[in-house]
Length: 109
Image 1 (cartoon, helix red, strand yellow):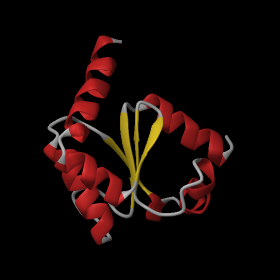
Image 2 (spheres, rainbow, N blue to C red):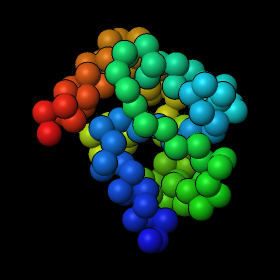
Image 3 (cartoon, rainbow, N blue to C red):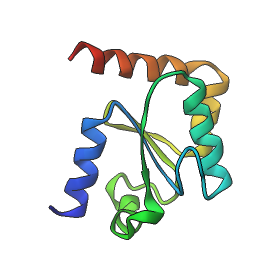
Image 4 (cartoon, rainbow, N blue to C red):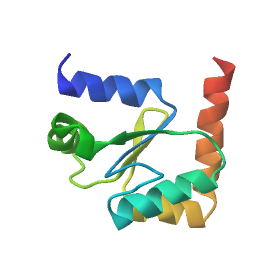
């Protein structure tokens, strides 16, 4: 499977997914750490992809949604953004609503 097809499948199959450096339990950069922490605070499960463990995804994800940096957060198949946007959404309460709605969609299917 082509790497862009793999990314598309991951984004579509997971209501909430973060592409990050490291894992939520062992992040490898501060931006990934803060973003994963904000998602964890929303209280719902989310998928994560460690881009450092998959060089193909690391090299090609920036092309997928034309977003050059990591982390990248996708909710319901759509790119939300990186660290700054995710933290802004978290601080104003929108992130929790978005994550909960995505989780409810998954539960209903």
